[in-house]
Picture 1: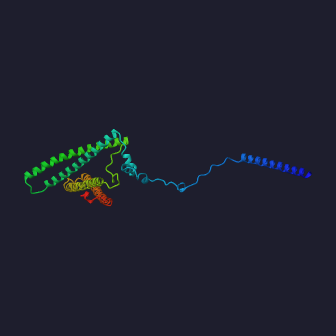
Picture 2: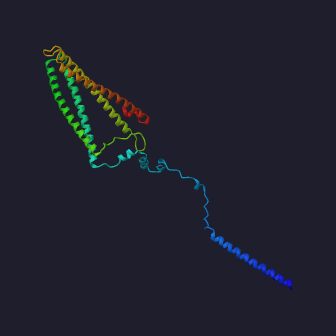
Picture 3: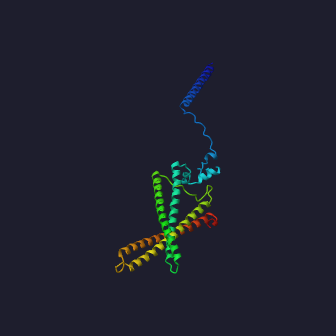
Length: 292
């Protein structure tokens, strides 16, 4: 009998302990769950695409699939892009006037120099002996007309240069810039034949101007030297001539010599520029026929 009671008591004691252990375990689980931080989201798996770094785009990449006009615009320097910007109506009118004024001043200066060469040629012709009176009279009349024309052209040249200077001063005050000529390359990056043709023509004109002035100053030096000799040998009542006049003529001769040297140096520089232009065009693939 006591054995049954003992077994029952033992079973009851074991059950109570089991229940207590179960409750304690549940309680600990609840506490642990309450103290545990919020569950983190599962980190996504990284693929090769995620690891690869993006490559910075370059101008050539950005314009690879762009239209032809966009490619050409992207390849132009900033100065060329700025040239496309619209100018004011006043600046556009000023550009047109300045171009005309430059051309007028240059043409009148050339005409005056050619007229002076004509006067010198007629004077030399008049001094040739063995000519008949009628021929000499005609040369003298031509010389007088050429001298009058020279004086008028010199006046017109001075006025044209004064007008040009006034326009340049106005543009400088306004911050205007003259229109640029053709570029060395076209929009697609090829050599621009029009640029080389225009540059070649301008350099040839500079060479011709320098040669004309060299001849002009050579004539002046020769004429001044003759006048110095004549003045020194035929001074009125003065042995050795008029020293004051001789000194003035000598100064004019030195100035003419200096101008001749400048013209000769300008010609040499321009010849070098022309040779360099031809070489540059050759390397750029421009046909040599455009320089003929």
